[in-house]
Image 1 (spheres, rainbow, N blue to C red):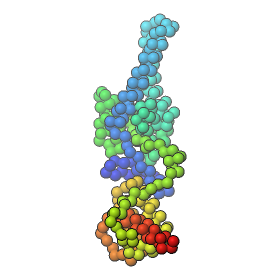
Image 2: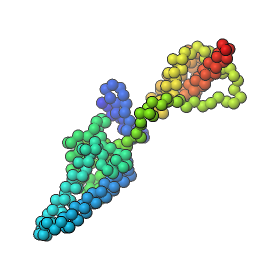
Image 3: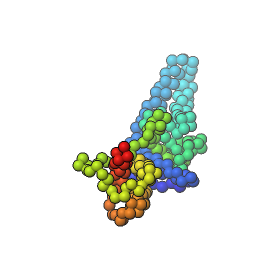
Image 4: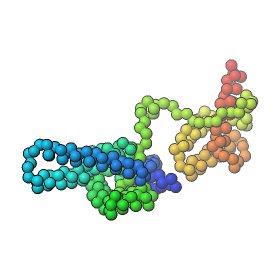
Length: 265
């Protein structure tokens, strides 16, 4: 797998099969909000344990009570993140609320070793106080990783919106600007009838997926499509916007098909 970034700091993972998976690294603001929520939950757990110990009255010795409270604080402080990130595959309640997830470099799920290492490093990330080291490294790192992430080889990313099966089964629609109201009922593109339904379907597929492509890849692919279609239609090369030309091709092909249907009917 190869990992690259672009000017928008997207985390891209290219699999050996040539499939590119894109993640958005979580920034300082979202990670801080998630941490605040988690620390609130941890405080509630500690207070609950404290009240339980006091109310139960089973332990009368103050030294023993102090030791139990210290043990409880240690267990919550170190166990909270480790247990949740292992059980919830890289998420804590705070991260789940903010739709964040810890993954390993390369897009793989976190494992026990990575979870333990990144959370043990919290002691250093916290220095000198209030996560000073951690916030500094998050701010300067291109993927917003704190020291624990750098050590464990992990990245905290934003999760995309969940897609249901019904949404996946819905047909995709390519956004094509409408024709001008005063356009004639005949095609404005010469030789458009030479195109086959397969040609137009390929153009439409590109127009449907273009927003998911990165800048250079999108421009290059659009220019390639436009050049092929221009040769097919015996049109000279052009320096115009290739995507606008492809939209124009789709519009005029539909006009040509409608005109042919009227003539045959």
